[in-house]
Each structure stands twice: as structure tokens, then as C-alpha cells.
Amino acid sequence: MMADKSKVLRLLKTARGQMDGIIRMVEEDRYCIDIFQQVMATGAILDRVNRDILEAHLRHCVRDAASTAEREQKIEEFVQTLDRILK
Image (cartoon, rainbow, N blue to C red; front, side, top):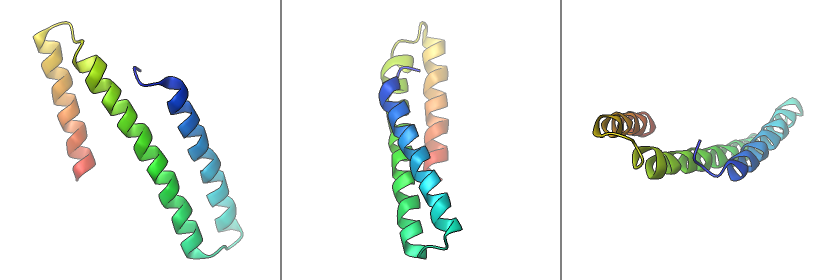
């Protein structure tokens, strides 16, 4: 993985901590909107992780592909990933 590993791990651990908090909130029958807001915040962190990983993929893996065929394959993977995001 070419993304900043320490940053990705920090964000994922933050999201994990938020998930633990959300689970407690559900177990404690907390207010729905409060739970919703925490779920959205956690989703935003995961979106940021995905963005960082995809950006690193594009900047390193695609750009540095050894051959034109490999580069085309990586571009196709990236396009398929975008299709999944935009559905």
C-alpha cells in the first residue's frame, strides 16, 4: 500500500473507537439522531481513508506501472472502483 500507512491506521483506529461508542449508544437506547450523527461521522472517516488509498494508488501504482499493459489494467481497476463509488 502506497498511502501514508500511519495516517490510514490512525484514521481506522479512530473509526473503530467511534464504532465502539455507537454500539454502546445503541445498547443504552440513546437518542436516534445522536446515533445517526455518530454513524455519519464514522462514515466520513472511512470515506477519507478510501480517498487517501485511491489517491495513492493513482499517484504511485498507476503512474509507476512497468508497462503500458499493466498501466491500462490499473486504470481499468480504478475506473471499476469509481463505478462502485458512484452507484
